[in-house]
Image (cartoon, rainbow, N blue to C red; front, side, top):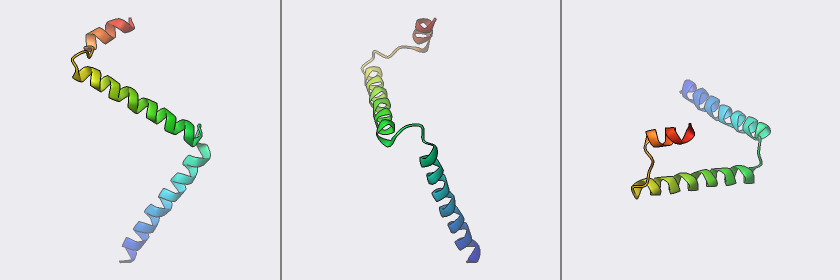
Amino acid sequence: MKNSVLCIASVLGGMALGSALALAFAPKSGAETRKAVQDFVNEELSRWQNCHNGSCKTHDEAKAEVK
């Protein structure tokens, strides 16, 4: 029982410490990060919808475009 409590306390302490460090060293503000995530999700959804409609590029087509 003691080991379980110690384990849970250690996990919670690690989570708290990790959260504090993430906030302290975050390169962007919360609003900027949320906007970046929102833009990424919207872009991926759009790409998925294009692929679903049959207009998705193959690997070779995309690779040729990069060259």
